[in-house]
Length: 379
Image (spheres, rainbow, N blue to C red):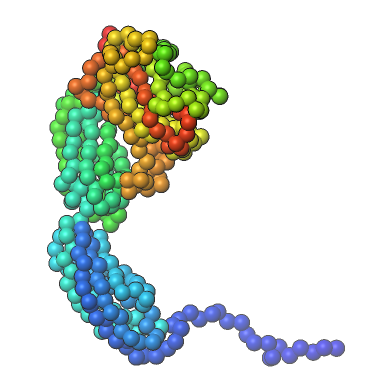
């Protein structure tokens, strides 16, 4: 018989977590070398103490005079950034050295002077303009700050938030639509990730009447120098069938630029054109990137000459991440399409011509997922 003595089996106990080493020696102090101030933030360059058991450097500061915040960097760094300040000013920051025993050094207090934050810089640049069916918001965001734009519309004499738009692109714009053509006040508040907000920027305006042109009235038209849009599984009419999964398509190797023409079926004062990429190719393949949109109200010459045509727009398709935006903005933009606003000074047109000069994939062919036109049809 084997006898096991329970006394020889060590008792189980929970692991105790704590400092990797234990002493009560306070580390040396942090030495501030210089300060670099920026919009709503400051970077403090420092020399850490020479303690062998140094673990990290910590900055302690207040954004609003009450709530304290901390930011930490590794002992191998020589700079720490404090950010989230809602206005320019002078602020105190305490710097600590912390060692492996979690001893904190005597604080070193330094003063920083962050400049006006991005929410205020962007708010300063904001413009609100009358648009077809709504209002156009435009702004400059030179630091590519990730910001939220809270759009408001007047209701019963009060500005009510209706939707938010998130963007970090350098030159931003957003249009709110679906408004009636009556005088209305609209506004926007700019918010950052620390929940700092600008004052309301508002404007009273009267949106212009806008409607989506009826695609059932569109007609296929092919001029002599147009390209065949029925290549492979594509078909000319698929570009305006309101089906996101279909597309038109040209053959490869047929030269540049590539062109196709469309009869809208009615004369119209156009406000904007939306071009949806072929949805199975994300910013690549034959999706149009650089092109021109031409228009005329006269029946075009069959030889394809541009004598009767007026250029309505030079178009460069956007990808927000190439302008400082995010991957989420890329996806949203891809699903919503490239929207090209047209001028109020542009003439009425019935015929549209797309002249494509470059695709996202630098391919020898082009394809459009869907084209949609807005404005005022002339009866």
